[in-house]
Length: 301
Image (cartoon, rainbow, N blue to C red; front, side, top):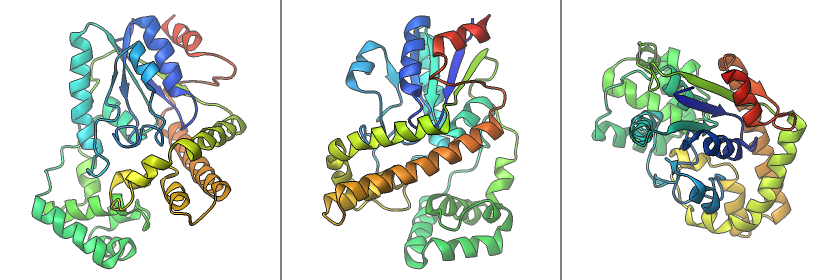
C-alpha cells in the first residue's frame, strides 16, 4: 500500500473529483496542491471543492490564505508538512491534488532554504516595482543577476520581485539558492503518482463550460478583489481581470467569457508542457477513457 498519493493535472481536468473518489476508497484525506485554491476570497473563481465535497471527507489547505497576502511556495511547503503530519496522526492516507508544478516539486524534491528577506528590503522592493514597473525592474535584475533574470518573463511581477528581493537581501542569485540540495517533504514515503492527461479538445470544452458558470457566479468574488496589488500571486487568478471589467460595466458577458477562456486555455497548455517535461515518472491517463480507481489499482498491482 502507498503512504501517499499525488494527483496532478491541468486546470479543469477533473482532479478534485478524482481525488475525492480515490480518497473515499482508500481512507484518505485530500491536501491541496494548487497555488490558487489556497485563497479564502475566491472559492468559485479557483474552483475549490464545494461544501458537499468537503462534507464527505476532510480537505486541507483550501481557502486558508487571504488573497492580499504574498503566499509563496516556501509557505506552502511549511503548510504541507503540517498537513501531512495531521493526516498521518489520523492514520489516513494523504492525497495531494492540484495543478501547481512547483508544489509537487516541493513535495517530491524539496526546496532550497533561502534566508528570509527582511521586511525593510521587501517594502523597498515593492515600492521600487510600483515606481518603475516590472519591465524596468527585470532589466535591473538582469544587470546584477543575469542567470535568474534569463529564466523570468519581463512581464512577471511576482517572480521578478521575488528574485530582486533575494538578490538585495543575500547578494546571491535566486537560482544559486535553488540549486542547493534540499529535503523532500515526502522523503521516504511510498508514493502513487497519477497525472490526468485529457485530450486538448476535451480540456478546452471543460474550460469553456467552467467559465460559463463563473461569469454568472463569480462576479461577487471579482468585485471583492478590486484594487488587489498586481504584484501579489492572487492577482493572477484566472478570469479575475475580465470578470472585474464585466462587474465595472466596461465589457459585456461574452467578451469577459472569451477573454477568460482564452487565458485559461493558454495557462493549461503551459501546465501540460511543464508536466510532460517534469513528470515523466507519473502514470498518465485520459479521464474520458479510464478512471482514477482503475489507474490506482493498475499501479498498485
